[in-house]
Amino acid sequence: MKKVNFLFIVIQFLFPVLVYSCSDEKEESEHQVRTQYTLTISASEGGSVTPDANGTYNQGATITVTAIPDEGYHFDRWEGTDNDYRPNGCWAGPGNCRAAITMNSNRDVIAFFQINSQ
Image 1 (cartoon, rainbow, N blue to C red):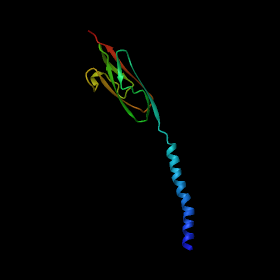
Image 2 (cartoon, rainbow, N blue to C red):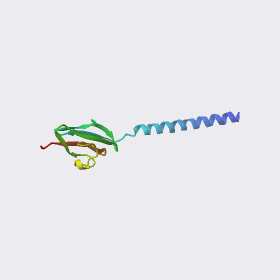
Image 3 (cartoon, rainbow, N blue to C red):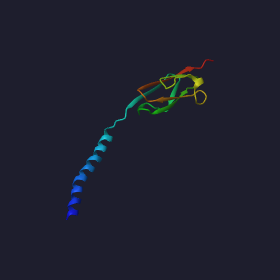
């Protein structure tokens, strides 16, 4: 009889502690919200940017985009990327230029193109 009473007492006091501690951890993890930032990408006349990466991203995400000039134009520069640079610093195929964007704030990124001189 003493064994049954001891087991009953242990279950009666230990079970609520376990349930409370597990549910408390779950509630804390559900309330953790990641910081998110908005990325807006545009292109001047004479080209486009791929992929269409406009949207909301978690803090720390890195997005890579490529500027693609239209026929008769060439890529000139980026504004708003991690490292704004001119084509001689680009790392893509001829006439194209890639850029990395780390989401540590809301970002407005623009790709600029110029018409080819003949």
